[in-house]
Image (cartoon, rainbow, N blue to C red; front, side, top):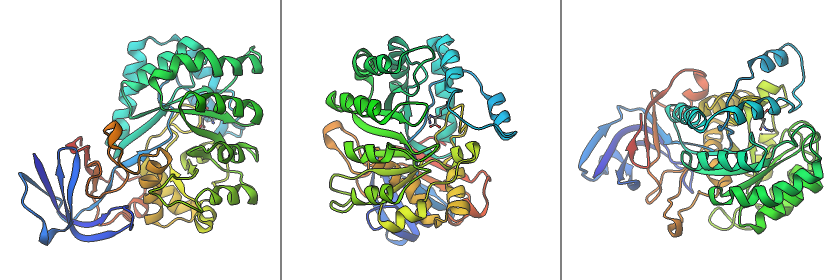
Length: 400
Ligand code: NIG
């Protein structure tokens, strides 16, 4: 079955040319895009959807979330708003609630959060373990996540559980825990930050996970300057996330990873910005403008989690990036679509595992499309907080 989506007033493709088409159309065939161009020249298709002049753009690619959890941390949030500082200790509260939840409840909670994200236009989603923190619980979180989301990341190195020795726990993460989660995950991540894992412990985790065939990601430079970015570049991580406190050397190191190959070669390390988290933790926003001007690549992601960012609204992140971080609408949308795909290395198709490129609209790419109840994507920032999602197709199937 093919579907012609036509009369799209403005179509932000976020393809290699970052083209913005006016009066555009595209044809969805099965799960892929088979044609894209001016509406006046569109081919016939089995079915037809009139977008009524609305804006179209790729579905959001949310490359950083922590959705496998139970419990609630409203009180911690309120204390923070009253002046307390975020120090990551609240992770233990969520670990206790998550361990106490049964598989059915944990799965139900995850499904509800994924449905919320999809309703907001997210069509490709990563999520992490990290609220289990023992072998059985991390394996359970990974297994449940693998049944629901597109990409699963092992974050056993989220926090050293209270009362445990940090070195012994790092050994556990690098050995039995990694073995237990390995069938379910594509990525490994580590929280490299004062109060979480040292650079040396983080390197140990990342090295072991790379040896097990996992791609690498790092939580770095969130709460202060630190070694996270340098370590991410050193190990060839696909992404370093948070990046709030960057030195000149960090910006140079991230930029240098993009000096050689273009997007179709082996990509460098994406700097993933999480503005909803920065608002909730009152951290300075990452220097996104500076990173882009220097030639680095950025992504925007929701970091949806119960502690620092309990929202999966990518539209909110895009609006914040435009209103507060100095990005243009096009740059912010690109970071939340193609940037997320780059950070997950899903920006190009990979026939070997049957997956198609996501995060941009081009022939052969996965048919992940959203239409806004607005004539242009600029309304995402011009009308922040408004429910602008009109229709969403995920892999060619209408999901909203
Ligand atoms: O990305 N930085 C570490 N992890 C999460 C917070 C998790 C939590 O506080 O529960 C984050 O912000």
